[in-house]
Length: 315
Image (tube, helix red, strand yellow):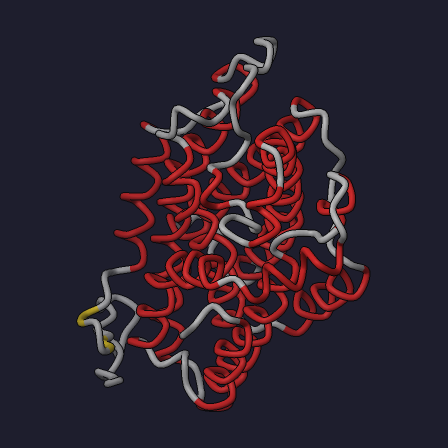
């Protein structure tokens, strides 16, 4: 990772470089994202047909992405029970998404608190917060449409996130943002074109994929900038906090209550998911693009890398 001297006056453009090359001007990136937002933003309340009935014989999540897929327990389950599990896991993931997006909105507000309110960078952050508000409402509505319960994270993880929101520095915030966005985005890109899946779920994931692409771009550009300019202690804190977030995220990804709710032995199901080579491959594939990026910019080092490995998201 190499640092090029930053501009010496306020009127000169920044000249920052990392292992991936020259960073783009922050304002130019934000202006392009604002243009994209103006052209490709959706109101889920009007864009999706919430009154249409659910379709018989369709999944709520692609079967290959259901946690128990290809395990001994899966092979014993009826097709009806497998589809029922997909309904509950879709609700669990939507609940996780809401929890995460509420955290993200708070971190974004903290990020822009001391910045120029007229800058494109701040205007885009506010635009993204508005996107996340709509996404959270959309996910909640999808849970209700599927007639499944909401699945909150454990009290421990809920309170760990409270600590993260309080102590996280800017690069740590954006690293954790990418963790929550990119793995779910990978899964949703497989979901929205899949005709085996309920139309309403496909519509929700399509909207989320289109709008999250901008959020990922914003977070990646800012994290690169922060890792170049942050002091060494903050870089190391980012590595550790991001690794710990990966560990928590992997545990919270599917609420184990889903197994109980479809009539399975919870302990057996959790054990089989942990032992599943298919599930490990799915999670590492979902995280692959992100871990490659984090490795390139110097986040996956030392203790942080060990935490990522312990999460199962990094081979």
